[in-house]
Image (cartoon, rainbow, N blue to C red; front, top):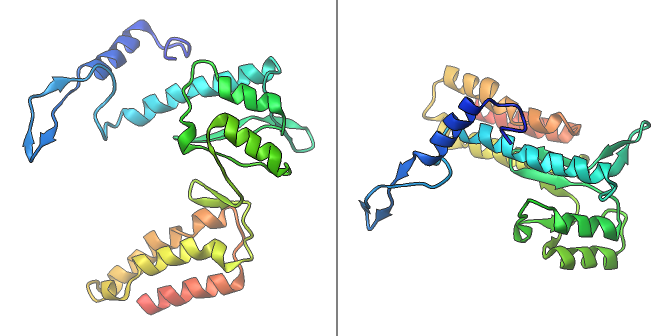
Length: 227
């Protein structure tokens, strides 16, 4: 992937050295074993890992583009201009989107060059009958999902007018603003905690859904009680 994206030979060797020069040891009964070198991969928490992971994921994007160009996989057309969408990615969360065709199921299963962990995946059929959904799930060896489902911790296709949609935000407010915590903070500390940290918890949801008046009032009540 580095070569395909135009990285020079020296840079590729640097990355290769990072992947093959790590040494680790394992704790056995509380005592570390002898260190051994990893054949491939980085240490857990290495700051280089997310960047390399995103580069690797370009392989999946390239495969999806190639399969759509060759008309092996048919994506979903969105908007007036009918822009074809085949996948959405954020870190290791991936959505593969296509029309309800049996050929699409076969294309997903063959996915040349990739090993998909179908046990951690689910198939969701929208505007599809139960027989097609079950057939696709059986062929892909994955479970049958339903809407709303969570993507990036946001319930997709949920009804924002229902209070249960906002339960994640409300529970997070209650957990972070527990009554015992306000006794350990000064008045100024509580204000900073509410404004700089907790107020941003709902912005993530508000960027997609419009909250009802009752939800806004409940969030304000929790903050007011904590203050």
